[in-house]
Image (cartoon, rainbow, N blue to C red; front, side, top):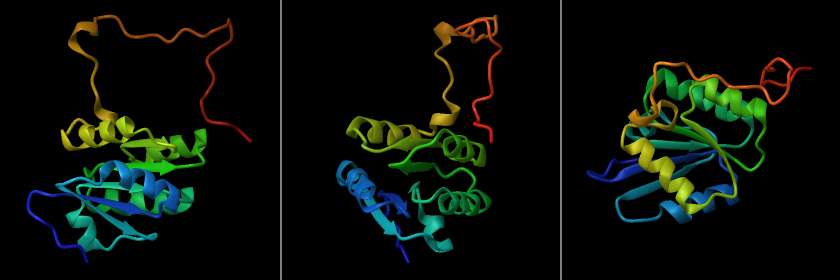
Length: 156
């Protein structure tokens, strides 16, 4: 069971491959950050102490953890980190409520940006456009050819 340290940012790494966990730890190992590893599950008491969660491994496992997290703590930043990204897994994670989905190898500035976004309350999923680019006209994505836009999800 994790004991919360006042003023420290509690980051849980759940089900991450050792290589991915090491890359994230290298960036986040600093004063005021406490990084905790868990194999595939997070206890409710740990979940209540978490400020940020990075989860990975098999999609079915991190989606199960994400579902549990969202039921108990719907606003805690939850990042999926993987070495084997796929479009379907990315969409499934975001649709299930992940804050963001990223793939290794990680650049330190990428992990730092994710943390800054999460801890500032912005969250990557809720970023709004800068006021200078807001207009009354809706944004329209133009297809690269005359074909109709296609669904991002692979079929079959």
